[in-house]
Image (cartoon, rainbow, N blue to C red; front, side, top):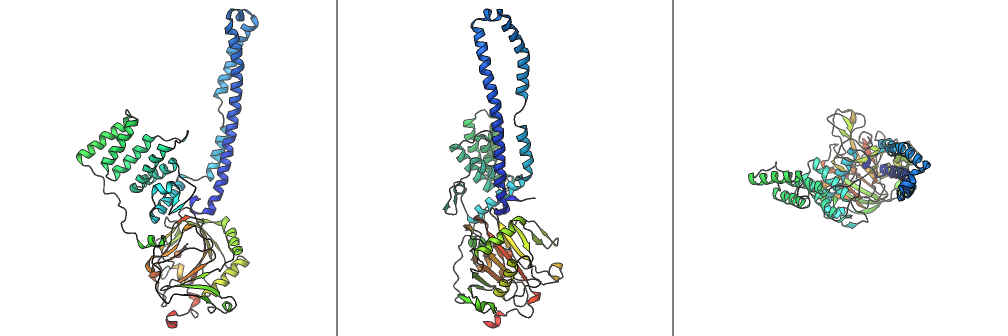
Length: 495
Ligand SMILES: O=C(O)CCC(=O)C(=O)O
Ligand SMILES: [Fe+2]
């Protein structure tokens, strides 16, 4: 399972594939044209002969050559024309599409993409009409959606039971269909869309509105039997006051996580938080101090700037791209890592000794954090895709007597490098401490997941907000506690 939309880097090949499909369709057009050409040229010469004959029928037919030829033509040539018409054009091209289908997005991919776009909309509180016209969270892009796009959103959200969101997209489809016509063979009828829109309104118990929509559709198609039946059904529902089960209502107050994603947390007023050059965490920093921003004290969280060079970032992305696979999350219930809806990105891992760059990167992590990386997890490189996110979670396992923590202990700290800027969205948000970190290419955020006593710190709850626009790349290192037994800096004493 490819899971196409979960990584921008992974979708690049779809464009090449689309180019192949278009070339294939062009071949089909060529074949059609060749056939059309033959047919048209033949018609012209046949007409000529037939017109000449009909100008003087008796004279024409009294010549034996003409009458012989006519008899022969009508019997033999038209048999061949019948076969010629019957011979389909484009079988090769049809087979080619079938062959490429293996690499093409499936209906599951479309459903995931719909969910992702809906996630962007709901997280950032965007209007469907704005999205459809390329206005994304206040920024105008030269892109827009077609009625086919918005209709697919509406249909699929409807099928997923998300009637509230579906209604918005279906309404938008109708608006777009008033302005633009969808050309054959992809066309969808307005009646069809209005019917689904009416169904969505019924699910939301907006029966009177549903009736209005059906009546508008009937004005265009007064004899459509499905519409007439629907109309009387809705009228009965209104008369008998029939209600659907209570629809899912949209949440009122914006939860903290969403506020963080939208950049709406108030700025910190803690005077202890500051910026400085760090030259003390390790001896190496005396030579190369790092620009450090103390972001939080509980959990202890620091942001370092300009840690990675452009060349290093490029190399990391290059080595990661071929191996990117859909990310998984450790499930306590099964004791295994599984693909989940709450984490949509693609990842790949590199052992510490993979290349001179990984060795250097790990050394830098040690210098920055003061941690010994022995027994820690591999470097994880990650690329997010369409609306890519990682829902609220903890990085620690909080598992005793589990295989996953037995050898090296729990994840004492997380080191998260940002390998790209993200044009819009994609912040790392800590809702419990009202902290949001927006990706900046080359910077790195580090926080402690465990308290000084080794117990999990629930203030570390965090999430990766859906990317609105951009290809978000991160690299992280989960540092395990066991090896830090003698070296872990005790912050409480230092205060
Ligand atoms: O990508 C991010 O901003 C956060 C990623 C994260 O929390 C994780 O991978 O555990
Ligand atoms: Fe995390």
